[in-house]
Image (cartoon, rainbow, N blue to C red; front, side, top):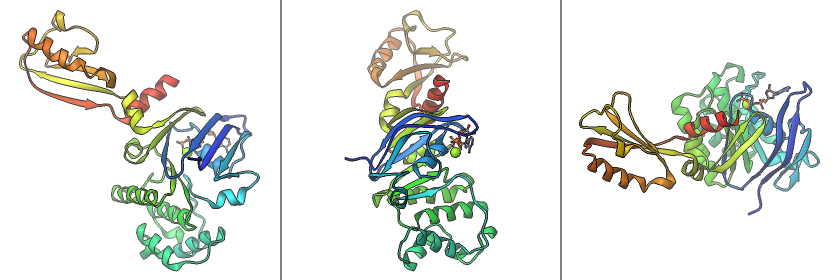
Length: 307
Ligand SMILES: Nc1ncnc2c1ncn2[C@@H]1O[C@H](COP(=O)(O)OP(=O)(O)OP(=O)(O)O)[C@@H](O)[C@H]1O
Ligand SMILES: [Mg+2]
């Protein structure tokens, strides 16, 4: 399938001399949810701003649905809804007026029914006549989402959409993202809540110091880089590992109460052997549980390695 967004050889050095992006190449498939993860200052917002045509690249090229973002800005931008990271708190105008204006900006015919549905979905309908400056922080963020969706874009960028949003509304927002995806909207989001990426994304991209160090299907990433642990609580604590048990991946907890076996997806077969060897050594255990490393642990490892 033809990508809906292609980024080729993208570099950005700000006027300050700071190099924020280095040789970024990325193809985004229509209908996918891509989560961009990375530490503060990694370059996520810079990348999004370039793809949305707000910041000019130093070199490289971006095409959105076949349109070059620089040469064919209006056509490219019309496909995109952007929820920026920074709140702009300019306005005296009302919520409804702001959303209506955003829709008009992209040349869409008025559609009151659609805008009402949108504001209701974001729990903003009751506030439609309030001035933006009188909204709470979380409401302002929801308004940014409403504005971004007002022209029914096919691509939605969410730059930390749930920062400062309460837990219940965050759940609603996840729900909304899933619904948009079912309608075929392509979604690129950044977040520091890794469980959010884990719950929502099809693919994960990791940016560190201006470099896209990895883009991978979420499930493949967790399969390949995730480790699993099997913890066995012993009947009798051990002072040290019996000699026939010492080997790769096995360790004894500090209090001697638990055996911890760490393995990756390729070494699952080791478990049967381990249990056999425990039996031979006369080591009994009263319970066992397993745990898979989370995306968060994988992410922390990746970023640490790249330093
Ligand atoms: N207008 C600017 N002028 C100069 N430097 C900038 C500008 N905007 C961003 N930068 C620098 O570029 C780097 C990347 O910033 P960016 O906002 O893209 O990071 P980010 O990954 O979005 O971080 P965060 O998670 O904190 O939002 C940072 O070092 C930042 O200071
Ligand atoms: Mg940012």
